[in-house]
Amino acid sequence: MPKTQLNVRVDEATAEAARQRALQRGMSVNRYIEELVKQDAGEVGHTFVEAAADFMKQYESVFAEEFGTEGERAR
Image (tube, rainbow, N blue to C red; front, side, top):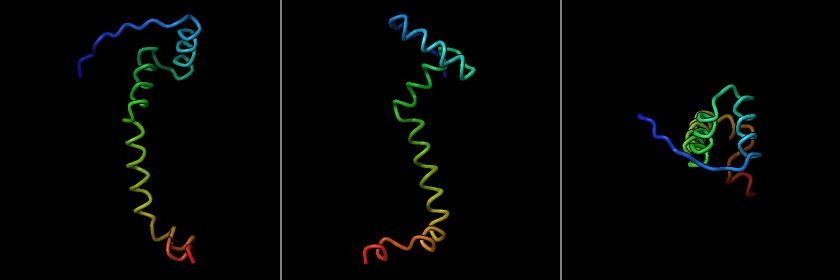
């Protein structure tokens, strides 16, 4: 996917925090900001939820055996 340049203005403390966080994660500030926006937009969260749903479906019988079903807990 082609990249588009986006210029933003932030105060120096915010800029330094972004630099430090990016450095801690071993990535560029550009990549760090891109990841934050993707997370905020829900792309990463959506993927996590799909993976969690697949996990729960795969292990549904194990959870039911260990904790019972919803109907059994209501009693």
